Each structure stands twice: as structure tokens, then as C-alpha cells.
Length: 130
Image 1 (cartoon, rainbow, N blue to C red):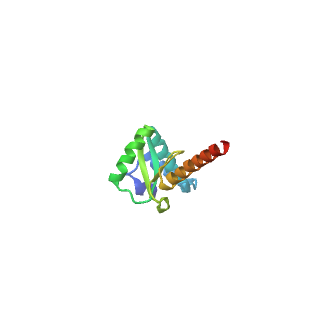
Image 2 (tube, rainbow, N blue to C red; image 1 turned 60 degrees about the vertical axis):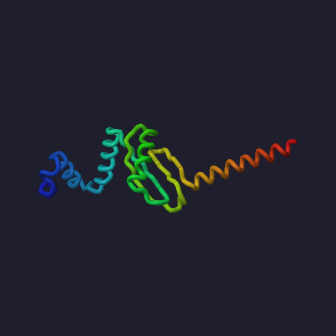
Image 3 (cartoon, helix red, strand yellow; image 1 turned 90 degrees about the vertical axis):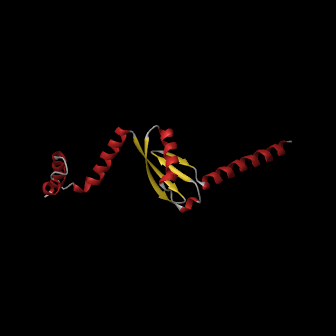
């Protein structure tokens, strides 16, 4: 049946591989096999996937500068996976592999809060020692 369905559309080796998976009752592994193959292919072609969360929808024109910046940072071609996340308030969070670039408003406010807290501690600490 597999050969009938895919003859002329897939390489004979690929058809035999699918038949082997079915014969060994391992067809449920096909999605993981495809994902692993794609990862190897991407690595060979210098492509990395960037998972991007934004507060608002990002169109192609808006994504282009982000892709260019990420390609400069990583030295690789970028494939974007966009996801809208209203909890961000604003800004963008990007994960490329194990690296996260957090440019969200929430993160910027947290960083500002921490700088102000440190400054207040420094100023109060300086006043106490006088």
C-alpha cells in the first residue's frame, strides 16, 4: 500500500524505510524521526530556529529587522517561529537554542526596579555611614 501511495513521489529507499517502520510496528516514531532529520539538515545548512514571543502580532516586514539582527548575532540563518503572548505587555522574547534574549517590557521594568533598588540601598547605605 505504501508503495502504491508514494511511488514516483518518494525515493525507493524512503519507501522501503516507511515499509520497515510499519513492518516493525514503529510507525508512531515517524514524527520524531522527521524532527531529528530536519534538525540534522538544518545544522548542515547552518540554520537555527528562533522562537519569538511578542505582545502583538508581528508581520513579515516587522520580523525582517529581527531576523537580520539574530543572523548577525548567531552567524547562522534564522527560521522564525512566531507566537503572540499578550502577557508580555510589550517588547519581544527570543529563544535561540539555549540562549534567551528578553527585550520584553516586563523584563525592562524588572531591570529598572532592580537598578533603583540598588541605588536606594547605596544612597541609604552611604547616608548611614556618615
